[in-house]
Image (cartoon, rainbow, N blue to C red; front, side, top):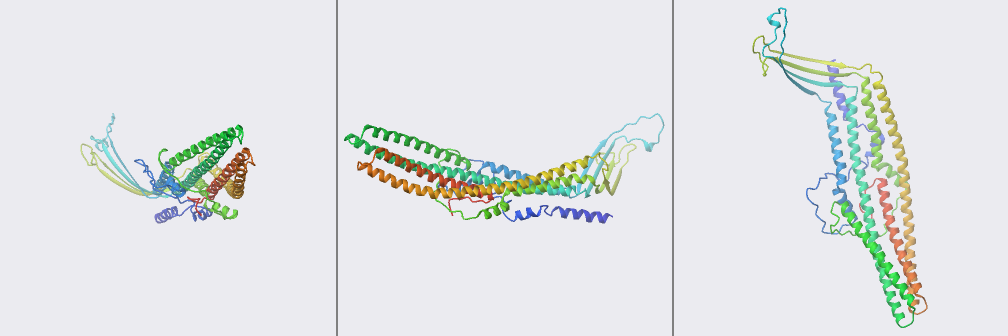
Length: 469
């Protein structure tokens, strides 16, 4: 019987190291859904150095993932859960316990008793040592270890999920910064055109070829262009400050960010995007692990249905001195050891285990529903962002054509005005249309890359540089 218990114990320890993940989760692990992009973050003990060279989108995203403090908290949580897994693994091994006690008793009796029954004068000192080895705990230890291992994997995947969210946040702000840079450039060119028109109109007015109202209208448009340019420059500086914060630097750090909103085609189909999302999304992987974790929690509860068996060996030494020796009147010294096995079984607890089992089973069902709901939402999210990318592509093509036509219209209006055929209103209107067309093109490009960033994150893919094919 003892040999059987030993073999059973070793078998349970071996099974504890077998991954307890569903087949779907194993397929998920074939990708990078649970693999963090960066690890080994540490709290900065001194301010981070300011980059000497300009940062493009790729460098900005990588730096944010490495140095942003919010990601360090996720990594610390994963280290905590990994330590919890190792702690649960330690429960499979033998346990060594020690007890040391000292006591002094006095007995007062009217009747006579022999000297051998008298209490020792110097008290009693006892040292007990016990080694116990769990043999069968109703699979409680196994389920507890597997739950801790699944939680460690879940927290590890949570790091990647947070890293992808950080990448999208940085890319969105970087694109916002480039939008303001190009918009400020476009508004500056618009202001230069309006200043040229104001100079021409003023010259015509001074020689009596144009009325005063043309000059006033040109001056109003110049002031409006200056006001808009100030707003674009302020937006650019605000985005730069936010980027500094995201990469772990003070807001006032003189960091230069460079990039160009040049169109980069996206060639994947919707079916390819969906397949990638179902395979790579960290939150889907986390949801599948949540189902397994809830199952292991139910197995822990179900352990209450079974007896708990453990083997033990103990030794007890007793004496009348702190070093367990015999001393004084009526003293004694003894040493006893014992080896055996014990089983405990809570046979009836008024339904406590039964209803706890039902509660844990309902939680498993809840997690399964949540997983299925997440799958549906992932499909919708991928398709909506895929359509946003395609929409922005079409807007870019239309806006590019509009810019060409607006430039031609402005040149024609300006020529007609200088030849005294057109009006000042025609030139100002054409300039306004050109500025609007350029703004629409910049917005379409920025919206395209923003939608592309969101699409990559919804697929669970890490693409630090969207501006490069």
